[in-house]
Amino acid sequence: MPIAFLPGRGVVEVTGGDRLTFLQGLVSNDMTQAGPGRALWAALLTPQGKWLADFFVHSDGDRLLLDCGREQAPLIVTTLSRFRLRAKVALRDASGEFAVHAGWDGPPPEGLIAAPDPRLDGAGWRALAPAPLPGALDAAEYDRHRLALGLPEPADMEAQKSVLLEGGFDELHGVSWSKGCYMGQELTARTKYRGLLKKRLFPVAVEGTLPAPGTPVTREGAEIGEMRSGRDGLGLALLRIEAVEAGGRLACGEAVLTPRIPGWMTLPARESA
Image 1: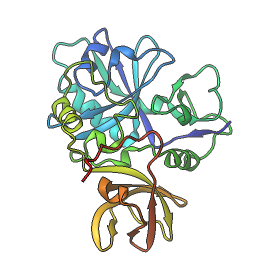
Image 2: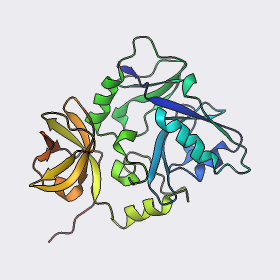
Image 3: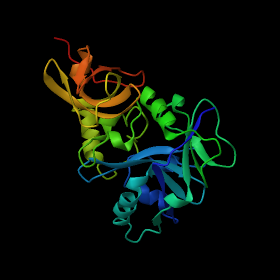
Image 4: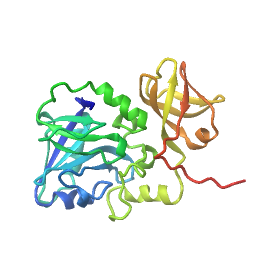
């Protein structure tokens, strides 16, 4: 059973009697569904509905622990703290106290704060331990696993520019459409219900030298997106949906990309001519 230690991940601790109601009005998912053994995937947005950070929300019964990009942890604490007001809640960067792990093809070891990855059944599980587990694999192994599934990381999103539906937050259970208002909810809902989405993150097979993030992707000479993260012939690219649906291979730097529409992804219906 593969288990990978993810040193690029950190943890934000949220405590206090109002921790659930506090986050409920600020992040994209329904915090009432978080509990021991059940994690949520959620995002923090700007008031204009643009992505700032995303995280897995764990609960041990007494606190919420946000498994996030380590570099994002200070931003999350600072941004959420601005809205604390009289709420009985405390936030702190607890990254130094936890080692974040991901595993797949089997259950997590006992004794950890662990839960299934809520995005896909095949994604595996997430776990927080006091220290790296003995024999844990390098984070590159997990990177290959999630790229093969088409799952985004923070590096695939662009702060204050990306919208959630570009990153698959709808199909991957990162948004609640029934919980009510939260910061940035209006744009997220409008994008979904008015069919405004033009680009998405797609998994791509890479032939040739792996392009750097941000490298333009072209089809028949026209720019239709850009490369995001990648490793060992696998990657994610932000691409125009109509260009992917048209089929064919794409140019990106010195490489050729072949996009794939994973089984979990739902693309907007197109009107017939």
